[in-house]
Image 1: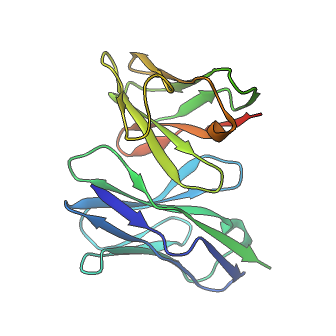
Image 2 (image 1 turned 60 degrees about the vertical axis):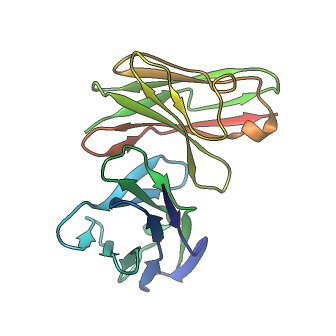
Length: 113
Length: 111
């Protein structure tokens, strides 16, 4: 079984400031890791994922996340946020042999002008 | 990739009634998943639906309350039965193709 903890339920930040959304997981098996974004009144979209290889993964809109196996973390970062990044961000894990995603509680990123 | 549509997109229902949510995928998939997202909370898996077999329910969810159909490889329905206000949530359909895709969700309000 897996579990995911997102330590911050809300993160307010000013536009153009850096941001880090924290994600820690626990699992008895090797996992794949994901970040999903949910913009207001929209469905879930995959932001980025770690399956194997380089522990640093990037999205097309400037977000990146680093898989840290020793700390069982997969924190999401962006060096400079935009108003349009305001959304709910969910960290999720899936076992290598499973099909089920386990989600964290979500972090609401609120970017202020 | 997979494109998922859901109907209805939203509904307001009276307690004690039932609502059936439809999920259509633009490609054939083996497994379909139904999630619930309660207000201000994360996603919780309700059940996994394979074509031609009974759905597998997660702890806390039962078939009598959330019956699921999976008549073919591109379609599934989830029924929320005998609704109460606590069932007010967004219900999402999901499939696992090359990655996990989610439908736009059905926003249900029970009064």
